[in-house]
Amino acid sequence: LPLIPIIVVVIALVFDKKAELKMPAYLRVGSVFLILLIGYSFYLNSIQGGGHELYWNYRNRVKPALTYVESQRDSIVVVNSEHIAMEMGTIFKEKNFMLTERQSSFDSLVVFLKKLEGARFIYISEENVSPGLPNLLNGSGKDLVKKGNYYLGEYLIN
Image (cartoon, rainbow, N blue to C red):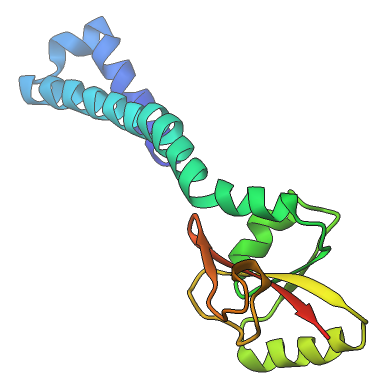
């Protein structure tokens, strides 16, 4: 936000006829350079970054995992990062997101879920760190399946 007052002063100096006559040449060149730099920054942050990169980032990084979670009937989603809970928790209000950043908290959650008969949950991780349970998503393997930037697993607690 400190750029706004600077921009206003530069615009006032550039477009003020009286100041233009008194302004040295290096200041006029610097003002034009600053305006061009601001224009390029606007293009870079709004059109290229906001339009193209944001769309690509969403489509390739987040959407595959969102589509998978949306297609599942399981209401329990276990995540290992608060970022996943923030990104997906606002979209899927009907699902319960549980954060287990450490293996000990995950083990405690599994003990709780065992009390619920036939509890199923989706596990989402930012890293390829499997919780060590048989993954229903890829058969009996324990590895997580990568979808976008996330690693996913579907588990049944007996």
